[in-house]
Length: 147
Image (cartoon, rainbow, N blue to C red; front, side):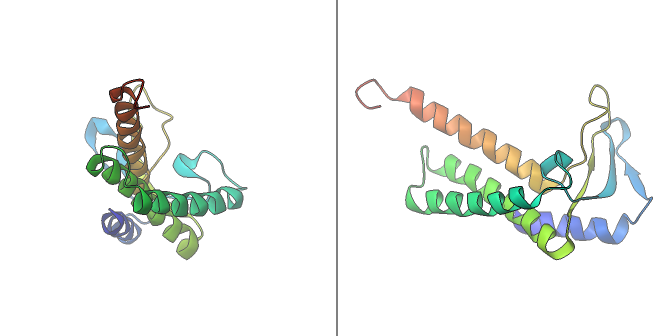
């Protein structure tokens, strides 16, 4: 995931220079946006505390993955891997460029104000969903004596 994310951002930096965009029909467009804030451009300006927190969370997730493997092992590990890969992709941008390169703009109805994002953000969201599903499934799958 990390390699795909970094490759996509490199291609965007090369081919989608300022003012250029590629229409995706009714599904939005591709356009280069530099995001100095947090994921999905939610918080701008004071992102250093959240940047440090993302590095700490990254190391915690790596420790969890290494130590326990997690419930449902394979799917849980895929979920954590997506989260870790996405986080590292955005951390690399923040360190190397001072901002994260976002380029997917789903400015279509009903979400006209949906923020521009990148593949790392998408991986993080999908990873969180997979991880939560596995944790919930594992929690509900045990009987009262096993929990």
